[in-house]
Image 1 (cartoon, rainbow, N blue to C red):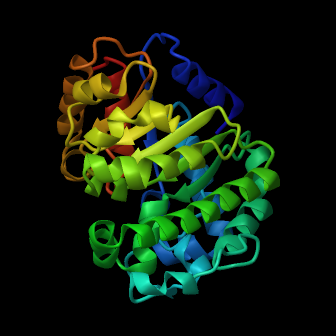
Image 2 (image 1 turned 60 degrees about the vertical axis):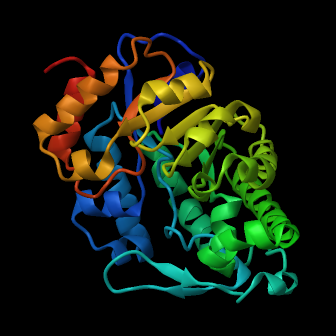
Length: 344
């Protein structure tokens, strides 16, 4: 993000009333590769392509907030391999990984990773470091330390079913696992901030907290999220949860979150009521049914309906209700921005 874009984001989070709502999107490899017409595996493995693809995206729509901006990631396998998971890189499609332990009984075999040396993290740091000069020469800076959340990472280490069952059958073991992963996340965020002084934000991607009930949320999600969002002294504390997010919305203030990207399945006015007035909401046009599969007219109708639900557009970034799909083309982005600006 450029300095003016970052200043705009801070103005939004601080509750300043703008002439019109801002437009921003949470984007990762599939969208950046898709809009540039390049293979996802090439995007992940070729640093030159990665830089050029990101530069093309931010230059094409300079008035859009692309978050987190120049993000080095390998999707869901960015973090679990530090604990020893096996990576699977399909020729087409998204990479994934296999559990490293077969049951919660084996948690003690897991060790706290060294975030400077273990898994894919050194490659992520090196990609950012190698391209830092070019990013800054283009007028941008690295703004966010990023990680998936502790429940999401834990579920990849032991398997999703085993982990979710364990929340009911072996709560103590799950606490040990989540605590270990939380230590890892705090270490990973800290080394990113140490490496890039321009970082002034945290982005945590934690969908799995949307799969559990409120009592389990208070026990297994809330205290660990509080630790993570207190790990760095930063201005922006950004949570992405596009699974069921009404419980999450009620606890954003307790988690110290001030920017929330949430599911399209929840009306934005309901999320505002639950989150309170102090949290900036980023959402929530349906990504698949509207942004990917809909026409420009469909997109503009959806944006207009969203804005009718929020008479007070302070602390609002009009966006997708989740990640931006690869099929969200330049033409559709322009139509989206026109609708937000009231030009339709």
